[in-house]
Length: 198
Ligand SMILES: Cc1cc2nc3c(=O)[nH]c(=O)nc-3n(C[C@H](O)[C@H](O)[C@H](O)COP(=O)(O)O)c2cc1C
Image 1 (tube, rainbow, N blue to C red):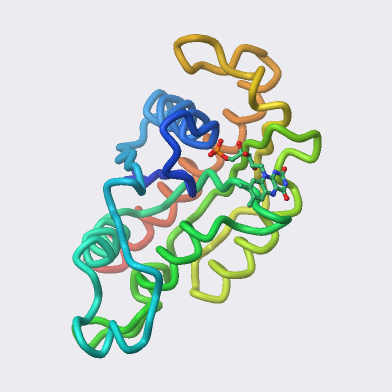
Image 2: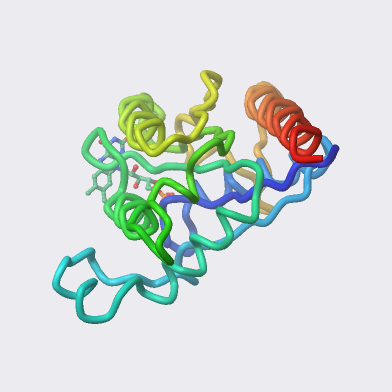
């Protein structure tokens, strides 16, 4: 069974290293047999979460679109920049909006049971290792199945070639191992669900 995977980075920056890492992961996942939707959070602009705004206008259109995409996929991969040893405000804001109850459904619906891989790229030597545990906690709390395997790309400013590919075969292999695990586990779970539903 070919799993459907939603992939995005927690950065909107045009030259984002995390976007490049997510694009590398998308190619690897397609090669491993997954159907991939790679999106850019820049195309999902949302105001900073505000309860009064929510009461007045409901969930923003971009959050509704992201929510629908999550629901329509078996798993996710998130490339998360590390900001002050945690997740970016952009990513946390998007997760928060999507986690609001909608259409009489609980806010966990888009997250529950989604097999999720976390990766990070940073210009620093720590490669985002301090931020991913925070993201793991947030998504686990929402019911996602966050894989124990994760990939960190250090020195991201020198890691990619002009075409955006990872230059070092060891880096490519490290990312590939995580992506293959994501494809394998999400395929197994999707197939189990299909059988259970029939
Ligand atoms: C407010 C802020 C805080 C940051 N804190 C960290 C940090 O704690 N650890 C780290 O490795 N990099 C940190 N950085 C650097 C970013 O991770 C780096 O700029 C990264 O390239 C951003 O991701 P992007 O390339 O996907 O946009 C910080 C950057 C900003 C703007």
